Length: 306
Image (cartoon, rainbow, N blue to C red):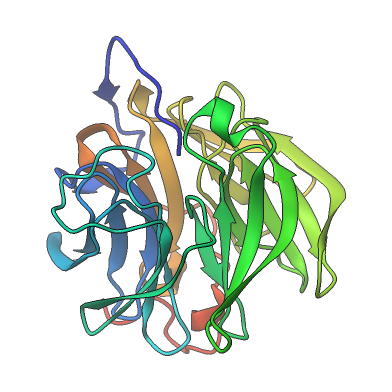
């Protein structure tokens, strides 16, 4: 997430979209929760919310303090939080939080790792229960230039390993359809790249896509291998087919800052988009169901009760 100034800010919903929630502050990092709700991080409020897509209600899960940037459901029902520590913007929360990895269990917030991370951004969980996260060197261009990393936090050893470095503000990430594939958005480079993980390091496999008119932020993969990318300052969401060609695009107005995407709802048939303008959470029928994330792949009812 990188915020830019705009003279005019107006959210315009694309055809078929609806406002699932609003007034939540600077919304980022949505994730499908085991409850079937959509979890949303509010960076400037230091708070995690849950949005019920069926009841059109929103509740507070927990106040993490600082600047929670992204959420990921864990293998045992926990919610992982990448905490930037207020480095992205001033926090309205009175709870201090350093850049760290946090975990929410039964609405209690635990800080499980800090001290050697810079500004954790987006995150995903693998089948070993490890948390993969992007770690920019800061939240302005001069701080982040070429010093960002992709890292893995292992909760069993409480250690962090760097698997990819030299990144220009690494942001959104998701796993591919093949084992060992991971997509990483680099906001300052203006592209999303796909990497192959060999168990120790990631190597770029040559796949790359640039968001037309935008700066890539959060990303999510659907069941047809299309990569959906929040266009950030482009105020758009763009889908790329497996070859990297633009297959679909949606626009959300002017100066609204589209921050992230995820799939939710029963069968992952709803695309969720977070928009900074108005603290908005937008829901729209997905063109294809989402690719189930690791914690939900063995579930017979992806998306939980609705």
